[in-house]
Image (cartoon, rainbow, N blue to C red; front, side):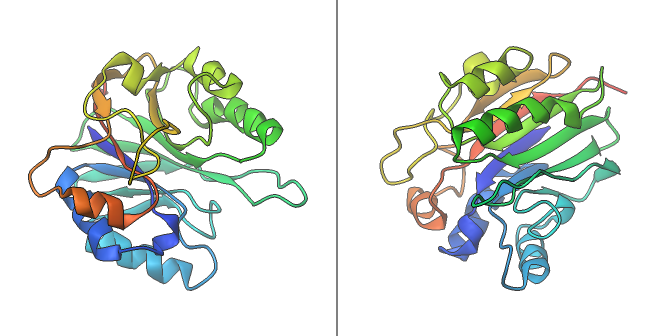
Length: 232
C-alpha cells in the first residue's frame, strides 16, 4: 500500500500545485490534515477528492474537525471509526479520521489521519488515544501532523508500540516543515508491528513531481510511505 500524509492548510494556497503533488505520488490512500472546516467544507472535500482521482473514505472538516482519509478506486471501506475529541476551552476542536480498508482485495488495515494539538498537555493526551482507534491485533497505520518532534514525550510514547516509518526505513527527505527550508520532522507515518514498512519519507524525485509545486501547494511537505499489509 502506498500512503501519503499531507497537511493542506485548508486549501488556502495553490490548489492546482497541491493536486499535481498528490497525483505525482501515485498513492492508494491519502491521510489529509487541515481540511476546510467553515466555508462549504463538504463541497471542498468533494472537489479535492475528484481532482486527485479519489473519494472521501472517512473524516472531513465537520465530521473529524479537519483530518480526512481519501482512497483511489479499488480501496474498499470495511468500517469507519471517526472520532471527535474532547474540546478544551480556548483550543481548536480536534478529531481522528479512521477507516478500516482493504486495498485491491488485500488484508484489512486500520488507517487513522490525525492533526494533534499545539498545546503540550492536550497533545500528550491525544497521543495516548491514537492506538485505541485500532482494535487489538489489527494491522494499523497512524499518519498525520503531530505538532511534535521525535524526541517529544508523545512521539516517544507512540513509537514504543508502533514503527516510526522514517526511523525504520528512511527514504527521500526527512523534514516536512517548512517547504521553503525544511528543518523539522513533525509529520510522520507510524505502523503497527503487523505492517512492514518498506520505505518512508518526503518525496523528492518522482516523475511529474516539481519542487516548485511542493513549495506552492501548502505550508507542509507530504510524507510518502510504502507499506506491506499482511494478507487477510
